[in-house]
Amino acid sequence: MKTTHTPGPWELRHERNGPRTDHVIRMGTAAAYFSRGIGQTDIEALANARLIASAPDLLAALEQADELHTFLIAYANEALGARFTDRIRKVNARIESAVSRAKSQA
Image (tube, rainbow, N blue to C red; front, side):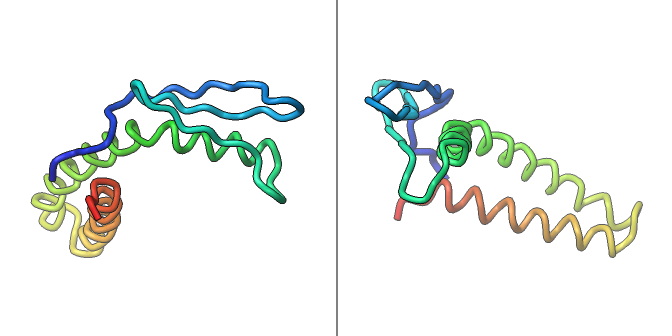
């Protein structure tokens, strides 16, 4: 599936906006602004912004893990047994689902 999002790296910056701090994620020429929501702490808002800013790196890591898991499944059943292979398949299914949602064009 072709990637259609702005390629990384995405950069997280912080800008003062009166009494609050906005968290700005720079994505090439685009930017997304995040500030603390109602009932949300500054720490939580910053953590959310960091997670979003790391999305391209997380997606790349998941794609690499997906390739590795596919390779492992081919060899793990014989070497490690069906129980371990089933665990690999379950993790691989979660990875494939997450990558698919990240690349969804819906």
